[in-house]
Image (cartoon, rainbow, N blue to C red; front, side):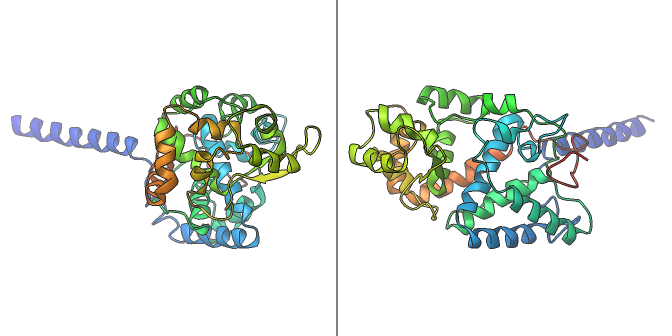
Length: 319
């Protein structure tokens, strides 16, 4: 009898341990290996074609993933269109008239659902994989994306405005913002390096080039031709000299006081992040390695898994 009770206790303990293990390891690079083995290769093909058509699309897809994760976790909420019940994050200050790539996400979703035979892959996972594949397509590092996220059924423009880092933030504000999402100063610096393939609207850097003193005067003058004091809010400037290549030029530019955004130059302005910026400016290998690690870390921000959320049939609307 004692032996039976011992065996029964062992079985229950093992089952409980398995449940706990599953709960804490819901995201896995192998999540779709059996349910849709062609999912990742399908996403990669569509992303590569999109970036080949327009190199800026790589930056757009990476940016969508960033902004998605910083609102309420990486849940695909940024993809939801406005509706009577959805206050779309597309209309947040950081996204309105600037966020792009939604049509490519639609294209990926259609191709993946066709490859899987039904909606199996979440829009949140599509964003995470597309961000990785965009970086790779432009010469950056690769990493194993953990998968198994579910899609949100809500969105919040208010939360997007409160949580997406602003281009006028100070270093202390940036550090606090990232800390609130479980990310440290190293993550802040290395993930900001994603701007190496980015562009910025005139409205986001006008104050920096006309009012800040921590900018190379000649560089500021060059930007003033793109961004006048009045008008031209949507005019674009590359965030580094090689915006079509994922390299460490962004950090070199910061060292030479050629950051386009106020928030970018704050990373190298006599503060606690100067040393990291300087290191990445001459060590692209370290930047690539650390970027991959921080992207994995960011991708784990509050994912919806298990029975939470849904797998959307259309990334723009709730089922």
